[in-house]
Length: 362
Image (cartoon, rainbow, N blue to C red; front, top):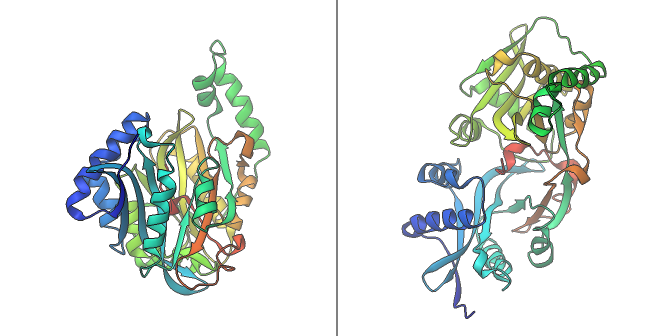
């Protein structure tokens, strides 16, 4: 095949053509999320984000788009200093053009271009199948294998989607749930109440800001970002739950209705808690699990993935870490400086706060 390749940033007038080609490529590869790629999604994800900045690149064969590479830009903090960070996502190559090193060339073009911009840092979350290009050709460093945790809530419901136990799934599920609950620590707080929130207030934004300051590297989860990411999101339904003790806001968790393993699920997208007291978060998540009226959503399991010391404490309330050999999509956090930042701070896992809100694979 003779390919007349060229690479470019996508101009505004070319965006409808790109959107159509994204849908074509996803349809060809049998992707499950073709329907989300409409103008509403595009505007939310790449136009209306708080910075108003996105870099979108394409590979061309003559006038046909045959590959794409997206980098939305966010405000972040690196060692307490405000910076701009780009998140590489939504990348693909037309299946008829694979095997020619096209993705590598597109990635090299995009990364070289963004190095000449005002963006300070790039991060991305490839799986093991796609990590090679980033490490070998684009000078990324691996920060961490991102752990994932799951909590079975209705094991009977899960069993019904997997095997036929001649109607005994509900009984077997109760046994499994009883064992899990037996080894889960009960959480109790006095004068505490959980409330559903429909808007991001200054009080919520301040809690996220204070929580983020305990980490060296993190997205700026201010009021504008939280509103954009969760309240205005066009991807799924989010619930914001807040914990108050004696009237004072002490913890917030954002969960999303979704499906995992063919089961209705709640994904823990984001969280914050006061005074370094992770028990506040444990109590809030436990309340979400045992009180379905808080979300009015029937779910069989809860899931979270990210980097934060509090996540390992979820074992106390019945979560378990998914072994890598059983995780169908282990994600890797990669980062690199696109300016003159010292990379030592970027590749230290302990510096990072990372939640499902950082990336958009669900």
